Amino acid sequence: MSYTMWNLAGVPNVYPSSGDFTQTAVFRAYGTWWEQCASAPPPFRRTPKAFHSQDYIELGFEEPVYPTAVEVLETYYPGTIVQILACSHNPFSQNPPTDVRWEVLWSGEPTKVLTPQARQFSPTIKHIGFPTNLLRLEVNSSLLDYYTELDAVILRGVKERPMLALYKMPIIDINDLSDSEEELSDVGGPFRQGGDGKNQRTGNGYFDKLPYELIQLILSHLTLPDLCRLAQSCKLLHQHCCDPLQYTQLSLQPYWGRLSDASLGHLQGRCTLLQRLNLSWTGNRGALTLTGFSSFMKACGLSLGCLELSCCHFLNEPCLEVISQTCPALQDLNLSSCDRLQPQAFAHISKLTRLRRLVLYRTKIEQTAILSILTFCIELKHLNLGSCVRIEDYDVVASMLAARCRSLCSLDLWRCRNLTDRGLAELVSGCRMLEELDLGWCPTLQSSTGCFQQLARCLPRLRKLFLTANRTVCDSDVEELAGSCPSLQHLDILGTRLVSAASLKKLLQSCPRLLLLDVSFCSQIDMRVVQELSSLFPKVAIKKSFTQ
Image (tube, rainbow, N blue to C red; front, top):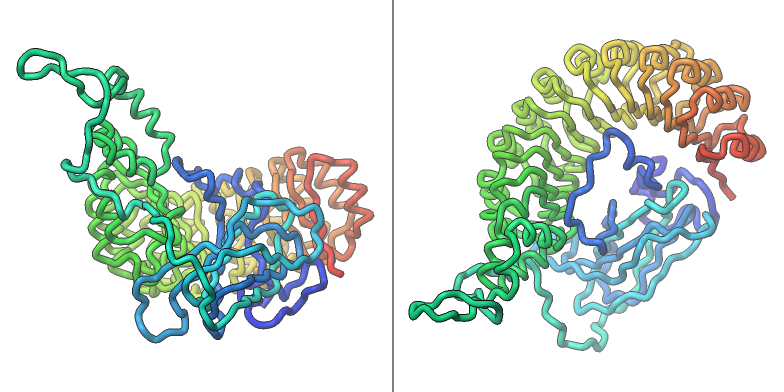
């Protein structure tokens, strides 16, 4: 399939050729423009500066080896890899995973390679003490000018364990930390009144003289592990570090490889005022269980407004039931790529009637559940149904959106296979507040029906429109966008053969806020046209990919 992660499996398809090839693996975002979209959630506080990862892919290999080299074949806009990890668990084993360990083989910061040409990325890796046939690549594309494309990954290694240093410095993490009173020490500092009336040293130094709020402000700049370590230093700082006001936002995504039920249990008493929680990527291969997750949510879910659970494969129907029962204030729920949730599980989401943002990208949700959700969650402003292939009739979903969710601001229908012009017409007639609409790779929409022109006329607030790989988009559609959507900032018409340079120039003149225009694989738009338009409109990033 075009641009899917499955293209990473097996031998190279493209390398050493450079350019934009559909046979490669491609992540959905690049640069930072998407972070400014209305649908993007605000970042979490306390995210460690060293945590750069935005997405990841895991790859299994036939035979476990002690790694000596990892080679990533990047065929277009390289530089996205920021971390390579190895796992002790054999993904093909029939036995349940126990004591799963992840070791970092290599890590680095996001980079911008000066050329989009293909390269073989093979950094010097750390030797590890176990054989592996499961690698994880973590990526960050924020500095790239276009989509990165990966062709294959090669794992090289030996069967026999090499000579390694057997001693390792112990790693302290949040699972190792205890708050027992006897472990809290008092050392050095000003004085307190003793029983005989004489001054005695209190052990808190000048912290005793600082206002409580000032200490809280200082501690708010610490990462979560540092906050947990500091809690062990003395009773005063233990009190400050355990204050629930330090835990109104909690992102555990950077610690996905170490998080367990015990970790959540340790944090549970501190998170009674929790408002935003990010558990994305956590809990896989048995690290989190229903028991640990349920206990945490029951203790901390009352005030929760935002819950990020992207790629949490431990989630099952009882987990969603617990969320629906314990999080009455929830407004923001992300279940992206939770592909082990069975279709019947999604019915529980309809109980979360205050939802405003719901991400169901690449899940198994079916038509009955999404219609139930739309019936009861009428405050929805942002909805992502990208690549939800089990929804039988998107026209019915579009009709329900138009009737129930008139305040909808963004809608992602990427790779939706059965939306027709009738459904799109109902959608844009009912949801006139839409600012973002992704109809990329929707093959059943045809420009000849007038659906794209009607879309432009009905959505004057439109800021982002993706019509990726729709071969029928034509000059009339672009000109209608120019005349009706003055706020347009991002437009993707990759792959159309029917758009000319004249209509693009009119669009650029009429949409002064335009920042991004993708005309890759548009046969009438060659590099000469792109260069000419770029010189006339230098503030617009006009994208035109190439192949060699």
